[in-house]
Length: 440
Image (cartoon, rainbow, N blue to C red; front, side, top):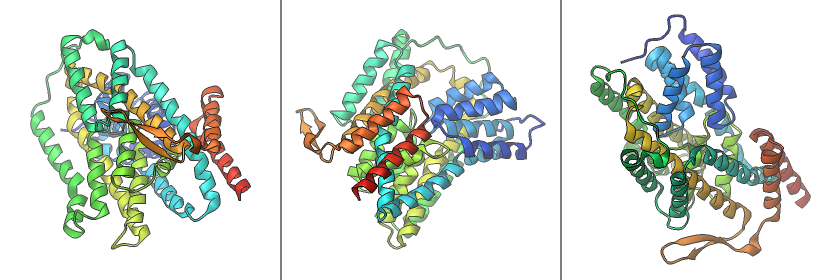
């Protein structure tokens, strides 16, 4: 079951366009989606406005980076599976190569003072960037009192009660489905019209075949690791963790960053909180989806526990494995469900689940904002017991004035001067370098 491409669009045309998009797709999912809309819908006119919006709605329903999945859908729409692979891979590969180089440079910086200064500035600027993402998403998602209440509940559940992130997403999906059934006005859900077209013939066989093929592709490197290195090796732990994360990555990268960071830092001990913040800052400077920050985490984990490989080989293998298990599922979802796109839009409970998950994600990002701020701004952060849970609580005497000052400068550049993320990160990195040189 494949798409029917317009006759005048060749695979070469598709490759050239998405090769260019992959190199300039900065600015997060909003900017990346806008870029694809301009290039594919407005300029090339390869896809209609309605088709583009329907595909975007489908991508919002799926776990994983929606911009990358939209790129894969466009390629699938124009040239079937081959087109989907070309567009989806070209959207990711440039950023992945840049992120791999930056991850290697970061590990070198552990022994180079001036690079530490650069990363200190980036880390402090990340606080303002996450806050900007929180306000932007909240403004679009929290359109009713019920959605705002759900966001608050999600924040408390994560920050104080430490409810696991996958369980929170599942609960939000169930709540949304019930609201769509019983009281859709609570989430301002519009009535859903029945699908004007029946499902494609043999759609169930198509979905099953696609899931089996891409499930094997997804699991192949894990099978090799299982047979050669075993489940105690860091590569197995990296692959299994990010495979699980790929299934619950609803709401964009920011939604899972806190869960990922807490597991990587406190669960596996792969890196520190400050290093996690550095990784997010690096991901903000690369083209492609922000979820490439997972590649940084994988690289650091493999670099620090490489046996039987050397450190650099271990880091590169873990980074490549992370990319594989993060993005292979994206192709699975798109190739399996794209033919059913129209029908999925007519399922009321699915729309309700998406609305609830989106609202809960605001609370998730708020938790990330507070968690990062505490660990970046304070040298010591403990936990305060509150009976039913605990709160992260800083030692106020350990406040880092320099980090706070750079964070405030970044906030001024983003919110007052309306500067872009790349420019803001560059200036804050320069400030961090200057402070490092003064201290030396």
